[in-house]
Image (cartoon, rainbow, N blue to C red; front, side, top):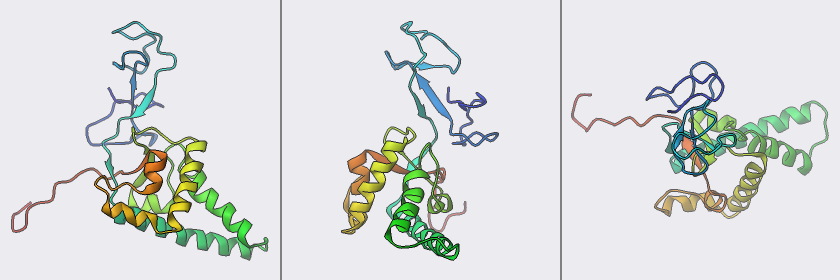
Length: 194
């Protein structure tokens, strides 16, 4: 049963985050037989293995974010980076390439750790996770940031428009995806009432 890792509240069908503490709902499974286990179980009911190191993955109803939404989020992040650089300079700190690199690493490398969001991702309702919906650690987030920076140098994200799964080059290299936090809502057909 999907539950909150903090307060152990069970997930409702429509929510991807706990209403109390805003953590993503997770699902625990046995490391040996992959059977679903409850949050406070110590041993698997199916195979009897110890669940001390049971893997946890997000159980939120997420869908892959569209390419235009991801590009929009990145452009919003770039705008936020420009504003942060202007604030940096107005404080009298030295500018130049080292300051830009430091701000970019803080924005695109540190904020997405543990299902965090950049400003653009927050505005567009997105989160970056692995393909199997696990949170990024520091190493994975920094590698993804470097891969994305390399791919942007030759407009690599636009190639996602031509891929069947819509993944960018950086996402394919790092086995991550940008997920939309907006639930799927079926659109009514033209000319019909909702």
